[in-house]
Image (cartoon, rainbow, N blue to C red; front, side):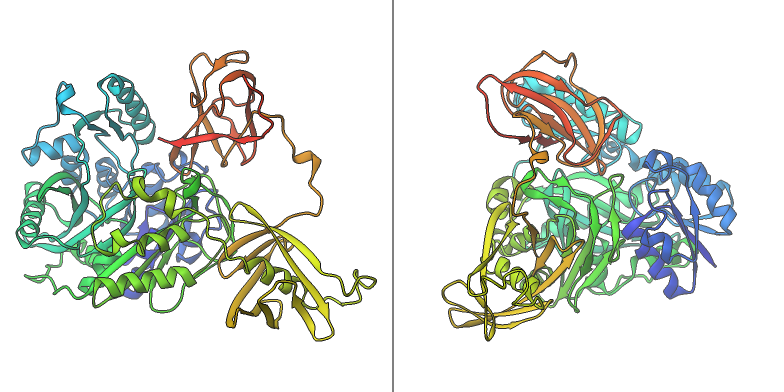
Length: 631
């Protein structure tokens, strides 16, 4: 039996595997980069081994170092998690060659399904060769890897060569393999997948379906089980194809077979030979622990002849440190607080006070709700996210709540184009006008009414905040009875440093207030407010046309021939930043002349760093943040 497991991963998935290992009485070993020295997964494991360096290439993608770490720590098994080396057949073999148990499918099965082109051939599907106008639109994809890297939708034949070249370059950099291929792009399709689990005794379980159609940058955001509204005949077809894929490679362990469903037809995409990020929804519906079952299969135990029955509906939302309103730009900084109400599952690799860095995926957590019906699960998850405390960098929490409450999602009619159609509406700011007042009252609580305002005690006080990208002013007064709002229709019922109760047009409302740092960052019922200084800082001004880094990251390349003095067009790509596993294109904000270039390949930049300056043909008296599009 397995006694000690090393998890060749980090963050949320490492913590999740450790949790099951602890329940089974199995010792745990973490590996960590220098950037993750104080990360939660390194703290909760029974032992931890350092991987020198910070980037994935130096650390979590170094299979040789991870095998050495497992041997040195006395582990007898390795769990790969997902991402990084989880679908690397060479790593799986290295683990086995070291005399360790590999908690995953056989290397030959990983190899067979590692290339999407070979996987399609196994399923009798041929990729497109010699794309013509009649084939458009097509999807260019990397043959290996995942996470949306190396993927491009091509709608014009004239763009094909350039997009193929860009996809090859990105795939080679991300996966070490520049092979790409084209396949028909299915418009309006749903992303549906089937969870399988197989043992070494010939049993293959099919654990229902999942719908993962809500995606950004070809990455999933909301997943649910079972996939809603599938005809029984189509569901049987999906199950049969999934079993066929598993048996074609003598699969063992947990795996997922992915499809696009459109027009009542299922189009095979690929088989992921690992545990999926969204596995908790299947666990909730079937009442199982997939990690525990992975371990049992690796130990040689047989599965029951039939899987357990499915019960109810489960939905998972991925909470990312990113700004959906600014091209999904990843965010960094201190996560001051992360808490969700009781009754939902929280899988995370962070705790209060942890730092969100630039080297890894920006996912903070997964929040999962299970209920007897889909409508109840949707309501439960949306309510939990709305009441969650997420204090720190900007996140997609509000987007998730609005997505779950969108009519199209409620009817189960969503597809992979959901955010293409609705992002603008879903990210439109809807600030609570009472939040700044609550923040100001909480800040004023405890101050002497005869302090700084002793000569103007009857005059209204004002405090300015930045909220949802807009400036707001809160006005209040000191009275003999205490603090009062200088706003019609609002009565102050209670004030202390952490709670303000206001009666607004006869309705009593509670506002929970939290402050961090020097008190200039305030959260009121989840809304983030920044205290604005009374007078602007002249040092913060920049020349018109300045391009500022929208996020911390590394400059990976500069446009060919770009140099000071070059003429540029509005929207023309100038340089590319890589941050949190994604590449971001920085474009010229205006048509004009490049008058300064401070970026260079390999240079790391902080958010707000000056990258370049474009002098507009028509002068614009504004400072612009770098125009950014995700690749």
